[in-house]
Image 1 (cartoon, rainbow, N blue to C red):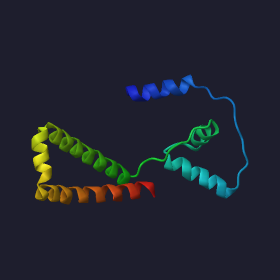
Image 2: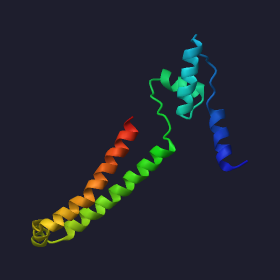
Image 3: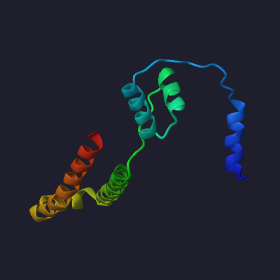
Length: 127
C-alpha cells in the first residue's frame, strides 16, 4: 500500500460516522442530487453532508475551463512583464514612446485581441 493510500485509510478510520440522516425524495430529486454530486466529484453522501452543513460544493472545472484558466494565467504573466518593462523606462523616455502615435497604435493592435480573448474566456466560464 502506498503512503497516500495509507493516509486515506487513516483518515477514514479517524472519522466514525454513526448517525444517519434520512429524507424522502422523488426520483427526479434523487437524480438531480446524484448529478450535482458527480459534477462536484463527490459521493452522494459527501455532497449531501456538505450541503446540510452549510457548505456550497463547487463543481469541478471542465477541460475547457482548465485550459481557459491557464490561458488567463499566461496572459496575466505577459501583462506583468509588459508593466515591468514600461516601469523600467525612464519617465522622459516613456513620455516619448507614448507621444509617438504609431507606437500607441501598435500597442493597441496588440492589446485588442488579448482583451477580446479575455472576454471570450469570461463569457464561457460564466455561462
